[in-house]
Image (cartoon, rainbow, N blue to C red; front, side):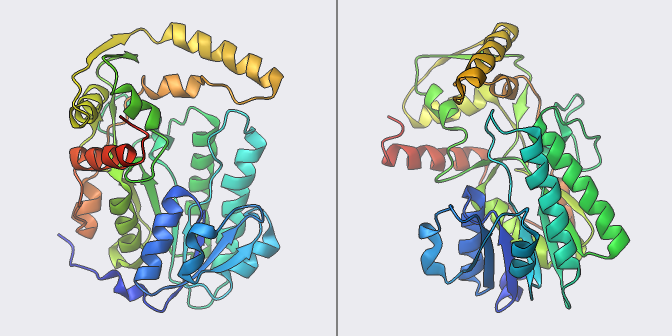
Length: 340
């Protein structure tokens, strides 16, 4: 077990954040403000900063692919948390993904490497770079098998910055988060809503599992990784101690809602065909398709990981179990009328 490291080390330190207005980024910025860090954040001109305005953040307006804006935002920084990403929309092109994930990472890393006294670059990748885990649980050394444009460009960016770190001496830690749960999370809302029904139909195999982590735990781990000496040069898959089956996910949520649904699996291939047709029609119409192949694939892939490295190398302790995190998320939805 690693010695306890206090994140209060960040008090008064100059910290730069990309993706600060996103879900994870906004939680991170609030925690940084609580510990007294001096925060600069890069935000696109059209992005609202109202929710974070009271935190005293120095906002630099510009895109992650704008070299001048990036250099301005990184000026004087001792730590960088790189969270900027392309929102997962079917209409987002390969070029758009590469510009943000790869080019943006390159510009940011190059700017950070030139800062005197720079201490740590936290690069947020994704556990999705491992794709469908054929021999679970996977760990940090498992092969990359990205299978969509988001995952492929995230993998490309991670491999580039790891190589750049070695060549140019950039102090780096890479974090690959799993699925995030917690108050305000909306990406899994449809799955939560499905659990409120009498019958729940899930495509794909029953042996598929999903790995989760509460947003508070993920932010805590990111801050710990930024200051812990043992995290330097390392890669971490960030997730709870264990993965969860989709059936158990549904049952935990349903139990909190006072439901007892019948969960049934069915072959995924008809839904894949329907999603492919839906994407084609919506592309012609210029609208976001209600059904994506990526959403279908979500239920057909195994995402089970060995997350011992978080605990054994850095001494990290999770605050939320899978059940505690899912229940808290359900209650947040119910309080806002999003679930009944």
